[in-house]
Image (tube, rainbow, N blue to C red; front, side):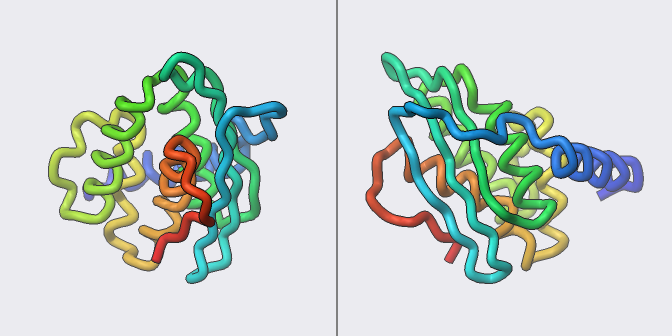
Length: 148
């Protein structure tokens, strides 16, 4: 990762951690899931309203590290207005980009800065927690999403 990207990465993470977007409870919501990262103790709840296959609103609340909070915030911005199928595609693209060697991260837009967590393997789970919770919520899995 070049110096400029590292600087942007740090700046965006700090901004979304200090000023998280869509950090609230949607009540009522049509879909909900909890997520837990046993490695560092991050806990999150994701709320979504899905109408005719489109995610019309999405939010989160929880207690987590800066990476977890920033990733949750950025995820809600990226997912709102997408269809469930588009959200699944973005989940897979994001997951592969942070887990692998940055292959095919072009379609991530602003989320691309989070691929920097690859350099810190213990932080990958922090970055993916909200995504796993979202996936559980939109597919109505009756389980706490985990990063294990």
